[in-house]
Length: 348
Image 1 (tube, rainbow, N blue to C red):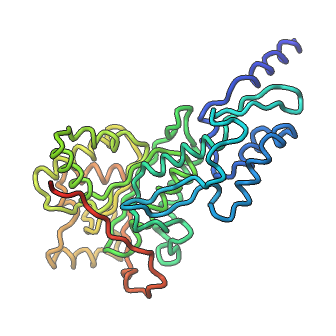
Image 2 (tube, rainbow, N blue to C red):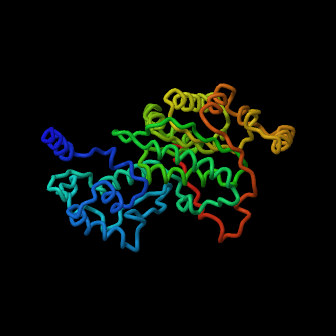
């Protein structure tokens, strides 16, 4: 009996760990991840050289250097992490623990490269390269920060499955409010955490940018599904500037396909809009007068911009919050985020 248990234990220890184990770390601290899962003197000696280079580097944030490049924010591996000296690019490290068992453990650099790819594929706007949890004004928008952070905490607690996909279906987030109150900043900060900390697939898109990309797609003779399918299939989709545009039949049809596709798949979807909401369930007494004044002044609501069908889906998919406050652009230049105007594809 004891022998069979020992054999089974040895077999389990020899089984390579999949990507699921590597992607369920909460932080990018390679040493902490390895030591937590396989604490042994042998493994510590095998990985100490690589980990020391990571922890002591003055140039990078635990292996990655994030910067604005052209229209998007990108993460580059620091020069000292181009290739793991232990696994030599194979993605698995073979080590021997204190009991003499051979272990194949995921190389943390391979997991880091995967997250780098997810972050770069998210297409976050370059003019929000410094948008993080830390740089967000929590005092001015504490309620919004709490809503987004709580959703991220629930998703992180559930973690990812063996294929690296979200395990849980958490209701999305909708942020409504005038320009400059921090909607995009907060959602970009969420995107950074989703990709770099959790390792979830994510795409960010400004609705106007999406329309330009679709027109360029048509000009090349490509099918629009090539552009829309990745937005439907990612774990997390962020749509900014919802309701912007001419609200033509074509634009509304694109938005309908996108929203209803995400609704049917149950993906975690976040949206932001400058238009006021008209759904009673998300309007409290403090803001009812403000809404009535906006409607009386001729300001369209989001429902009027996107139509009742899309609005109904959005209200069901997302937990909504109305963000108020002064435009951050009225602050001193030292308090602002560095803003860059993205270039749009040409019409040709």
